[in-house]
Length: 216
Image (cartoon, rainbow, N blue to C red; front, side, top):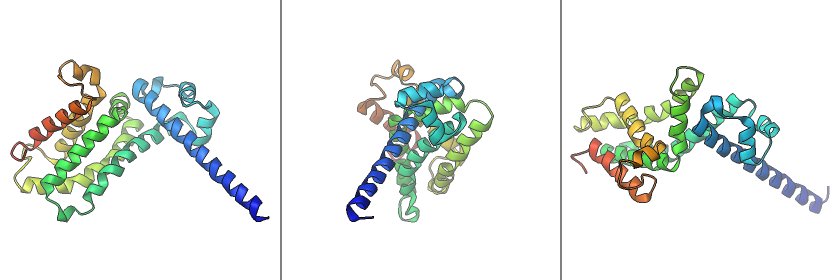
């Protein structure tokens, strides 16, 4: 094979791989919107394909069954959250635990504000016992396990005595994400649109003052 032909084929292969990745990402984004809005049972693969500008067959090709696609959406959503959060804990012993937990809380709420579909999907498909709830818990559990040692150090410093690691995590998930998922409801009570920069900042400030009143 001559050099020119080999170079052309490499370019085609690279372009093909890029197009496949774009198709896959488009399907995930469309599926996330539909599952968040409608729940697993009501969401249609054909509607998801239409939203993604692709076909039902391509969804099957990249993800398999509807259940496989739902799991891929959850993994992608939570993977994006973990990707931003977990590096905060790389040097856990060198950082003040209160400041680290406050940074985690702030970052978590900014991400849930940017991705309200995560909480919407949890509300739709995490409300009943079953394999979907099990999958959600399995994916979220590593985040809980990562912050537990930090939480315990914060308690030793005299803070968050009203919580244990589990109740703190649930408190944070609910207070930090549900108001963004239910933005129209929330906005009937809040002065600032919770999806706006000012609304996000105000909500984060309220949560931090509630959790750490003596340090804010």
